[in-house]
Image 1 (cartoon, each protein chain N blue to C red):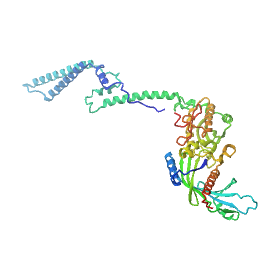
Image 2 (image 1 turned 90 degrees about the horizontal axis):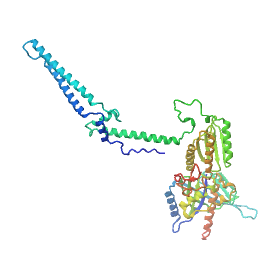
Image 3 (image 1 turned 120 degrees about the vertical axis):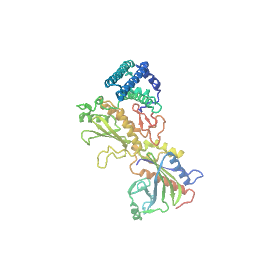
Length: 329
Length: 212
C-alpha cells in the first residue's frame, strides 16, 4: 500500500496567530517600555561615572578641596548608577518571563525579528514544524495500518529487537525432518495431478520439485515448514543445472512463467499462519494447483485468453479464479 | 519447443504475394512483435526405385529447418519419420540407386521471424522452382507443450493478425492419443509443412501449367 502524505493541507496555526501569541502571553508591555528607559538611564549614569573618572580632579585652590570635590562627584555618580540599577531590577520583575509553554519555545521569538522580509526564517521554521508534525501523524497511521496486515512470517519476530534476540529458536523452525516429510507426502497424496519430489541438497532444509500436470514445474525452497522461496519454470525447461544439482536461482525463459513466479512469491507472503505452518504449505499448494489450466482458462473479467501476449497469470487467493494481471484490480 | 501451428494464408485479392506478406509484417509490428532474423524450411522429394511388387511406391521427403540447422528430417508419406545429422543428404546421394531425387519438386519457404512475448511467428513465401506460390505462417507458442491446452489461446492470437484466416487445429495433434503431448523435436512442425507444401504443389497442377 503506497503511503501518501498530504503536505498541502491548511496550516493548523497561521503565522499571525503565533506572533500575537508571543506578544500577549506573560509580557507586560508597559513595564517593558519602562524597563527599556531604565536601561538607557543606567547606561548614561554608568557613562557619567567613567566620564568623571576620565576627566580626573578639577582645578581647585587647594589639593584637599580638589580631592573632596572629586570623591563627592564620584559618589554621586555611583549612587545614581545604583539607583538606576535598582529601578531596572524592579521593572524586570514586572516584565515577567516569556512563556515557556509556547510550542516553539525561544525560537518563537524569531517572529519579533524586524527584518522578516529579508530573512523569512520564522515562516520557514513554522512550515518545517507543520511538516514534521504531519509526518509524525501520518507515519503513526501508516504503522498501525501495516501492523494489521503484518508481513512477518514467524511468531517470535513481534517485539523481538536486535538487542534481545530470543535464546530459543521458535518451535516451528526446528521441526523434526520426519514430520516435514510426512506433511509433504500427505499433501502430495491430496493432489493426484501434482507430483512433489523432496530433496535435501544442503543439510536439513528441504527443496521441493513440484511438477504440475504437463504445464509447469515449480521449485519450492523450504526452511523447516516455511516456504522460503519459489521459482516457476515451464514443463519442458531444465530444472537441473549443468552439474546435476537443482537450479533454484535462474528464472524461466518464458515471460508467462516469470509472471507466475512473481505471483507465487506474492502468494507466499499472503498465506501465513505462523502457528500452523502445515496449513500454509497446503494452502499454497492448493493455490499453485489452480495453474493446471493456465493455458486453458480465459480471464474471468475480460473473457479473453491473451493480454499483451500473456494468458491470465493471476489466480485469486480465495476463489482461485483466473485473471490477467491488469484485470485483477 | 512449444506448440506449433503451420497454415497457409491466401493471397489478398488484387495483391501480389509480396504485398500480402508485407501487410502481415505490418500487422505483426503494430501488435508489438519484434523482428528476429529470418528462417527457411525446404523439402526435397525422392521416389523409391526398384520396387518389385506392383504396389505404388511411397514418396520420401527430406526436409531442413533453419531452427535445427544441424539436423535433417526424412519423412515417408504417413510415417515413419526420422531425424538425422545434416550429412544425411550425402547419404541420400549414395542411395541413388534406391531413391531418386525428383528434380523440380523442391519446395521451400523463406521469410522473417518475429517474436512476440512467448510467441514465435514466421511468415514465409513458399517458392517452387523459383516462383512464389503462396504464403505460409507458422505460429509457435513456446511456453506450452500440450496442443490441446493452448489451442484456444493460439487461435485468439492468430485472429489478431490473420483475421478470418485462422486454421482449425492441425490434424497432427488431433490424431494423437494420450494427452496430445507434442514431442520435443520438430517433427510435428515438419509434417505440417509437408502437408502445406503438397497442397501448394497440387494447386500448381490445376491450371495446367505442370512443372513436371
